Length: 534
Image (cartoon, rainbow, N blue to C red; front, side, top):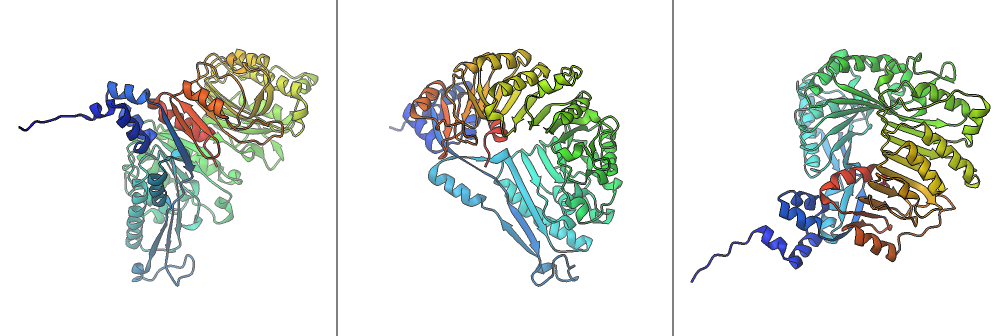
């Protein structure tokens, strides 16, 4: 007598022993997240399962090389020598995947980013030959991207300045379903019109999730060659980009000779505004804040560098003395769309020094979009001045708007409950704290933060983790002599494991704890920027 037995995957996953075996040996955290989304019952099973796994993170940097044997660097090919072009691919990722199967670790790509470098030494090619090279190169890069389906950022590294115009051609042929941000070297847009002959109309057609282009630069922009102010190609590119949803253009790391390309940047801004593209300016180095001609810092209001201060979304600056703090104060109050502020502080007791100068009251309360504050105390003698450090920290906190949700602290020690209460008073909506070389004198110091959802520390400290915390990451990095805490011990690991059902760790004694598998992508993004690094 024949009988049929219909067993669903849910039925299989209901069996505890089988479920644990499948989760342990075959499914990554991302797989589990996807599985939890299939139905309510599967979400319950996956989220309530204890998962403990080793992890490893790495920087993904494939390299493509195009060259012709026997030809000097950048020498043009003969008309019939295209068959001599050699494409070499340096990519360790497939080997890494094989290793993954052996030791079953959670593999995390730093930044979820493909950092791609293209070395093109073919010299000048005819248009039809250039198209053949672009097609071949694009095919190889698409293969690279195909096995990196979870990447969300594609960054073209600066490698071969003379021929980087090929990057724009390559983009026209690439496809990836998850890439949200593409980083392009600014000089790849700076060649004559003839270099872009044959460029497709819809350059970004292959990126259906794209919403951000980041333009970055380097000293090479002036050291190697002069640039061409090519309005036609800029218009072509940003007209195509304006078709994507929530298109955003970000300027970042503009290089040491920013003054010489000011007009070029203004042209890009003008075209981006014309196509209603959102613009952000990440000022991440002090040169962008410096007037070399007068050898003084200049105001955002009257400096040619910043005619449109409303675009500044991220600002990083060194506070080396009281004068530099004055200058920062004068400029920050005009950055109405500022989202991230990083202060590297090389001077101590500056509140008292400001009072001695009878300075006017200063506040950032008008920066209502400010979400993240980074305070990095760099003074070499600060270890001996706990009270001064605490006073400076409390003073800076008093300047901040209530909109701040992320607080990152570097080189702060012996923080008391009184200090954290003051911080929380002025920034009551803090949801994330990132700590690097931070210690506490009171066990309950973090209890001041009533809305804290994530605590990320690059060093282990014995402190009470508030019940509101949903993500806990503890590293094993020590840089300052006063931090002598060992890595998490067995008792701590067991304690956190009882509270959090998901645990990741590596051979360096770095640990990540959380519960909600559905939030893994958000957690990972937060960790990739603040915890998972080389």
